[in-house]
Amino acid sequence: MNKKSTTSPPAEKTGFSLKQRLAEFFADLYKVHLFVLRFFKEAFLPPFEFKEIVRQCFEVGVRSFTLITVTGFIVGLIFTKQSRPSLSEFGATSWLPSLVSIAIMRALAPLVTALIASGKVGSSIGAELGSMRVTEQIDAMEVSGTKPFKYLVCTRVIATTVTIPILASYTAFIALLGAYLNVNQNEGTSYTTFMEQVFEPLTFLDFTASLIKSVVFGFTIGIVGCYQGYYSTKGTEGVGKAANGAVVTAMFIVFIEEIIIVQIIGNFR
Image 1 (cartoon, one colour):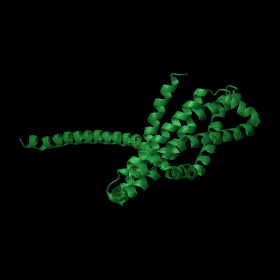
Image 2: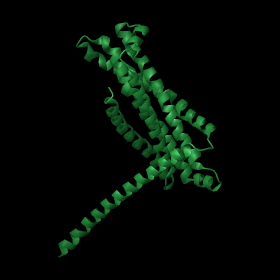
Image 3: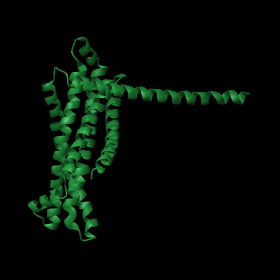
């Protein structure tokens, strides 16, 4: 009898913990759903915070310019360098510009840009809004009659949605420049010939898919960072969790979206 009484409570506790976690998960999912719907409701209603949107575009784009440049150049250079030995075994090094252009335009440029932005922009948004929440600045804005959601959330999400595609295009250009330097050094290919071979295999669908990915990734980074920061709790500890949660969650969702978009676009090829 004593053994039964000692073993039953842990089982009940485990079952209760599992139910509680599932309930919290679906509650958070519903909360995110309402957050996204609220964004679409308020983003397209006046007044429009154009000055704040421009300022956030500057924060997202110009502040990430140096990191994007260095990363894009290294990606193009290293990818070209690593692909050459495999192609040289078949005597197909002349296909290297086409291979690099397809890889960069279809996958690397938008994905690398999104991952960098998730780490830099997402964490910044999460920490900034999280600190405003725990210091009750957002509550003060609500009391004063302003609309903190529209001013803080909508402007940042719109900025990331607009700026990330621009950064992805710039990343692609810099990556191709790094690839060209490697190809020119080893094969002596001119810039004109290299660019002709780069754009030859690309289609309108490739550019469209890259743009769609960038827009979706930008929206995801903005909405995740804002959500984590806007509902931050537990003082300064919550600010750190908001910044970390924005990075991890945004990266995870970006990878999931990459898989889904690739599968969808693959049906049109």
